[in-house]
Image 1 (spheres, rainbow, N blue to C red):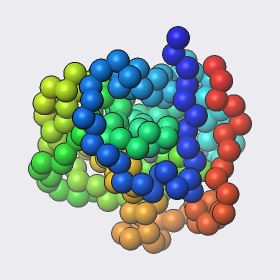
Image 2 (image 1 turned 120 degrees about the vertical axis):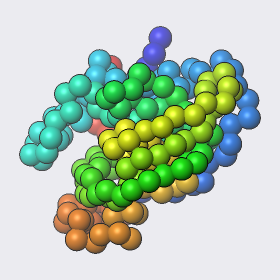
Image 3 (image 1 turned 90 degrees about the vertical axis):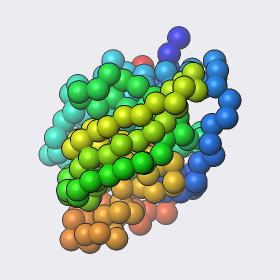
Length: 197
Ligand SMILES: [Zn+2]
């Protein structure tokens, strides 16, 4: 039975770690990917939690799902695995992704399930080609544009221990909200209220 996984919250040190390549493909990896996809699924009660939070802040409510991607380190596994559930793609997992080509730049608003109360504009490539392995270990390649490319780059950053707030700081300090600054400077990890379905 699928259950939502607890999502580590900034500044948990695991979120700053560089992940290891995946070398073993099999039941465990597939199970982890399926649980990660379930964790960002709208049927999960944590969707209600996130939507309530965003509504209280006056921010956009993502009714269709709580997240469009999740990286393994966000659930405590420091391996090169991300799941993507961005509009326009079927849900899928990327193992050992490598950015092969990129084109263009654009700023766009981002937030993160590991730092839910922060959001800000981040520059990302507008077109990317990424090679990766699927859950069976087969080599695949995907071309993505605009929002889908943004989601993939955000999740791939997690595998390098980079949070989107790191890029806001280096690229555009003005984009920081006061709330984001306060949260990033908090000494203790934030705790989610309820992860159960
Ligand atoms: Zn994130």
